[in-house]
Length: 173
Length: 142
Image (cartoon, rainbow over the protein chains, first blue to last red):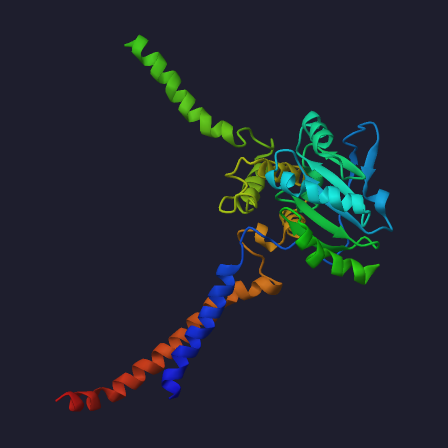
C-alpha cells in the first residue's frame, strides 16, 4: 500500500508546486517596498519647471503616487479612472512622469485631463530606479506615515481600486 | 580590385560597428580594474523589462538607466556588494541572476544538494532491495 502511495504523493506535491509556478505571472514582481518606508523624490514640476514637487509635499497624508508616461499604453487605459478618482476627492494623486518628453506629456494632460495634484518630471529615470519602477503604469499607495501599503503594476481600474486599495486605506486612516 | 574592395570594407566595418553601437560601446571607466568590476556586475543583473537578458545585453532604457546608476555608485567608490544591495533593495532578489546565499534564497542553493543526497539514498536502497530479490524473481519467471 505505502509503496504505491509514495509516488502518488510525490507527484501530487510536484503538481501543486508546478501549478503555483506556472500560474504566477513572472513579469509581475512584488514591490520590495511593501510595508517599508516609501522612497522619496524631488523633481522639477512637469507643468512648472521652475518649481519642484516631491514627497515632502504629501507628508502626513495618504496619497497615490502614479508613474506614467505618454509612451505607455496602459497609462492611457487607466487615465479615465484616475480622472474619476481625482474628481471624487478620495485621495490626492501625485504623478511621476517617467522618461518622457515634456511637450508630449503636457499635450497629454491637456487632451485627456490632469488627475494629478502635480507631476514630477523624471526625464532621466533616476527617480524611477529609486522607486524600483520597471514598467509603467505603476501605482503606489502610501500611508500618512509614509509607508508603502500597496503597489499595483499595470492599469488601475475601479475593480482593482475597490478590492486592493480601499480596504488598506480604511485600516490606516 | 581596390574599387571593389572599398565598398565591401565599408559594409564590413558597418556590420561590425552596428551591434556595438546598440549597447554601451565606450568604456565606462579609465581604470581597467573598475571597468572589469563594472562589466562583471552588469552581466549579473537581470533586465526587468526584458527578463531573459542581463542589463549588459539590453538596450532598453531601463537597462541603460540601471547601468548609469551602477556606474555612478562604482564611481563613488561603492563595493560590489553595496551595488548589489542597492539593486536588491529596489528591485528584489529577482534582479540578480545569481541570488545571494542568504535568507530565503539559501533554499535555492541548498535544494540541489539535498535532492542529490536524498536521491542517492533512495537509489541505494532500491538497488540493494533488487539485488536481494533477484534470485526470487528468477525463480518466479521460470
